[in-house]
Length: 460
Image (cartoon, rainbow, N blue to C red; front, top):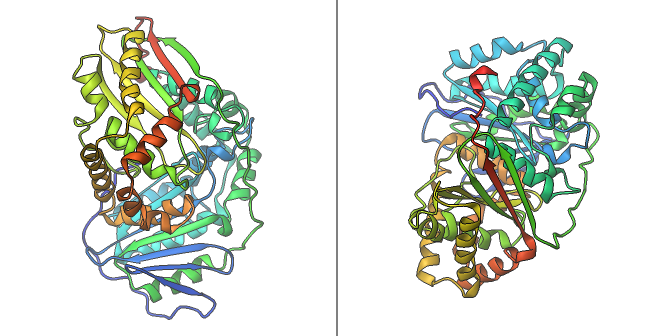
């Protein structure tokens, strides 16, 4: 994933014809337009005239959760293949064309979705519109490109395997999920990356890359009726295709604690305490977000955003200032189904995993004993709300949130997020903490270094 940047020049979008009558438009608050084309493509538009830029995001409802054994990593690999282009838009030419126009583009694959974006001067957005409409139907998947990307992705996987945190996280996911697709890493297993064929990848593409399984989100300096006409002209002609059947494999409840230790190279010990967290659409998600902010500082749900200081959080006071850990962080993610919330500790070399675990559990017992002080919770919620607001300011981020919220169930999730967070009470946080951090629901993972040097990634 790239870092968003843009050149501030260009004119307004040069479209003049009127939208076709087959589009039904629903006007939403704050300049938002929400519609669905006859082929099922969901289109979300937000006019923002603060800068002559437009950001386009194409979202597909497919991620690593949708992959069955034998095809793990297929969603990520298909994303790679998109950058190989189409007969009309060869891959090598696209990067040059977007750069010449002062734009940026990239893509990302996640647990629940895959997304492609371009941010360009407003006068140049037609390139992105034409290119994504073409890639949605005509990605080439040439056999030599499939094989070259196999080498690239396996190398990426090998590089990840050099990371202690990747090893620990993968072991925890494998232990935490026995049924659900969240069990495996997004990049896939090495065995599947070695055995998947071009036909496997192309079948995955054709099954999930259909207008009815996609959301097109644009934000920026455009005229909505003119842009809608162009979108219908380019995307409306695409065949709807059959609706994909996403695997439904609910994970059974965890009934006893899980402990595991991973050993490997390095000199740093890591400890992760995980629990199954609520899905983003669950009412408990907002209280859990406040709990995360109180414990470790707020998690950033925006893929582009940075963080803010967590020095006022409980675990920073207890573990970092107490010189038990050199760092502490939380990891709450907005997901379609219940995933994992992780408390990450990088241990002080003077402490063992046992002593760090004891200190962490002591801090948790204090939390479980009584509701947090209202003033402390108010500060934690304020920090979480601020981080959310900071990650919603740019044109690219505005387009991101339109599509991201749709991946989680609807625009209302984004529009009401701050209100829901502000309504969280100390009793809500206490209830969620006792329920989700119950001993039987905990997973404790330790990375124990053996003292041998870490592999040199440059040697891969």
